[in-house]
Length: 172
Image (cartoon, rainbow, N blue to C red; front, side, top):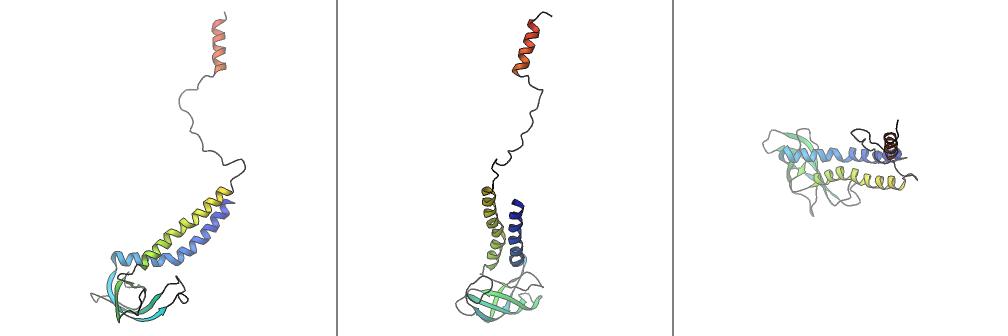
């Protein structure tokens, strides 16, 4: 029964990680050692009903990326920004490298959200699993922990002491 619950938890966590971990990893790489630059953007507004991933308000943008140093150029990267109005003609940020598909804008923390989702879901899945295992405890209880064997010579019990005393007391 517990194996089935573990399988269900894994079936929930693995697809979630497949969805969230690539963005989280890309955001960490971009912030840790990515290439700074800017994007000339064209944007469309996202409302809570139209955003398929996280139901947030903001702007979905894309455009060509050019590094500040001029050595990296990517034809099209995507980015998401929280703003009341459309972002300006260019947006500054970082990409993880020459093959990146996402730009992580300066001042936005979407990558932290992706990392917290990737790390928090397994913990949230483990809590109900632990509660379910506690509810399904066998009637006679779980087996106790194995005891460590005592070291040293075997000990003599009371019956052996009485016999030894009898042998010493009787003439033989």
